Amino acid sequence: MSAPALRPRPAPGLGFQAIGAEEEALVLDVLRRKEPFRYYGADPAKPPPMAALLEKEFREYIGMDYALAVTSGSAALEVAMAACGIGPGDEVIVTAWSWIACFTSIVRVGARPVLAEIDESFNLDPKEIARLATPRTRAVMVIHYQGVPAAMEPIELEAHRRGIFVIEDCAQSLGARYRGRHIGTWSDIATYSFQYNKVATAGEGGMIVTRDQRLYERAVRMSDLGNYRPVHAALAPSQEPAFAGGQFRMSELTAAVALAQLRKVDKIREHCRALQARIAPRLRGLKGLKLRPIADPEGDLGFEPYLLLDDPAKVAPFREKLDARNVNCGARTGTYPQYNRDYVKTGRAHTPAASPFRDFKEWPAPGYRAEDFPRTEDLTKRFIALPLGWLYTKEDADYVADSVLAVHREMFG
Image (cartoon, rainbow, N blue to C red; front, side, top):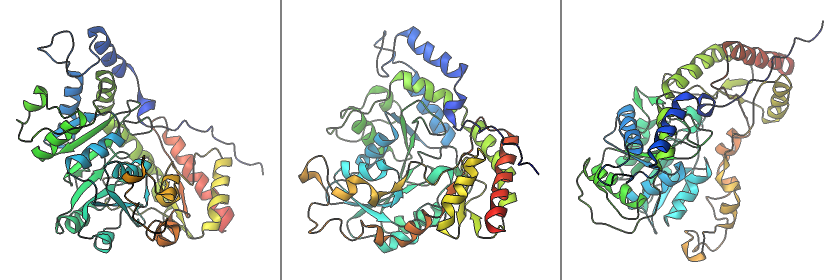
């Protein structure tokens, strides 16, 4: 019997695959007005509208009082921590399995990242807060990993009962919900990204949301060289003294693309969830394999189901067999444990005096080595990611499930 015909490999990708006439129209509007800077243009009395409109629609979509557009998701994290007053001598709990900026943004404000274990959802294990919190802990950063919401209720309770800020990093998961509420609404302050690979993209760009007027004003000042301009004062009159800030202002061109993309998020979410719904039920109950557990299955985005194999030795051959069938899959998605990154191995900042690790007598110190994270090490060696995307069809989803089942029969009998 001849082998079944291979289905062509579908093109992966989320927001960037949905770019079209809507983005073009808004960008052309900015160009024709010749107003690419958000705070003033041809008429000094009438600020350009695009970034302000993006902020308005974003806060309405998420359900928060304040939103601030910035240059990137990484900038958003740095600005959010500055808004919370986090700096030298402070500690921030963050999962060892997280994107580069989660760690480096903490170092950039002078605080010390304290690495935590993940659970099988690949998000923060809420019990880690009690284990790692010290009198120096000022915040916990919660990463909603690849479209799956973290268990925010126990995390929020564990943090707030200790007086710790909760910062949600929603960069990978715009549109996800937890218990009916958008992620980003459970914390003191939250951040999002419009980078190329995100649910909605403008190439680069970020967003900060909060309900706290003080955090909002401080975030604005940090993002705009200490300024608090009329467009922001009209939303929330100034109550904070000025301080020296950075420069993380979003341009009108970036805002135009991000605005068009924001309006497509729910369609992208519905599409990916429908694809996942064709795949996941067929893969449950398989010997030696399970799907990543999700704290709120009704709230995840569905764009990247994970297979967790019992035996790490079977991960590479399983993935290779799927790849040979033209199934997009991977053992990594651009994320690696922080303790395996070069900037952690050296313990350096841009200058020795700025490193929060400078007082350690040995480096890597306990808490920054692979052997300190047995659960993270185990889980991240046993998974296969199955990315879905905007251009995937129902037939593509069925083929992914068929292929996983075929490879499973071949390897597990």
